[in-house]
Image (cartoon, rainbow, N blue to C red; front, side, top):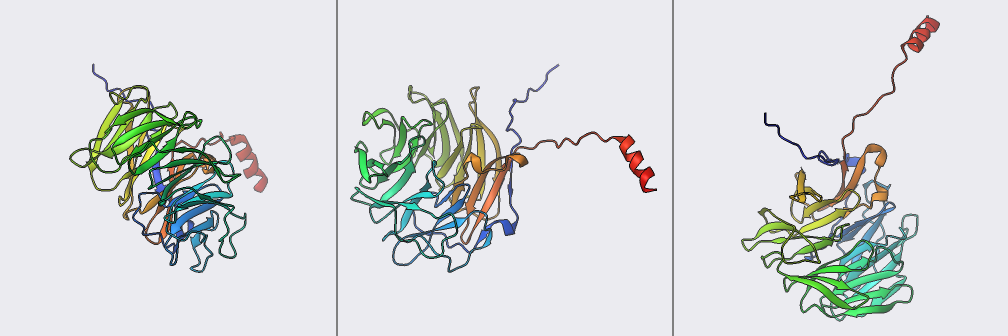
Length: 372
């Protein structure tokens, strides 16, 4: 007798759901800057979105619990003199946010606990060290007050935010840097670059410790993130412009652990990684769907789980840290999908049977007798 064996997984049936309309955020004028960042950052207290503004760059910081329509006169954070390109919340303090801009600076902001009552224009610190626009800003995952920035001058600078001084400056990239991701303990970071190379850098040694030419053969932008096991998950394009994902061992870049073709589309796939579940959510700019995969130690190593689709294409996406999800509802992830004029939360849930306590029929009989 032949019997099909189904792969055992706790996350095989994860499903996505959009929240009710009144639990979203309406009337947000999302930025139209042509830059492949997520335009959105979220933590358990605040939602931050890069928005359209005249005379410089601005972003909205809105309390997470205040859902519904956002007042068109709601005060913005307006310190940059050029369009804001990237924002990132500090993992150690929910009131600290970093931003970077076309004005060649990065800024760090202290957001008050209550909603902003007037525009915020005074950053805690201004980080000036790049000669061209700064397109990437990301906090160190384990060390406080350590911030990494990357600019179109091909420099990677690691800053001490407490003093505003650069700690490390690396010029190993000959072309535009597309993405940067720290590993789990912050000892290494990986980068993708316009020269089609994937690099692993050690900031303490100030050198590239491993690199791979063309993990994806296409010339369009790539993205890379570290997984919890120390491997690197990449998204890119084939030579025929098909979107592709890969899993690589940085200690042996010769052959991929896994390489999987997806579809034909122009949108760059932005990966969001959940280290606890070892799952990756892929969100393409201009797509109306979110694909999610599980990474395991068994072949084929990257397992497709499902696709969550809506009608409208996304302009950007925010990913809630695990401490902000509602575990009482079996929620394992929450994404914040940016549309043209609003932000729509998407909950990812593991289905579970609800177990009810056994009914004591004797007590029910007594209650009926007493009421009669």
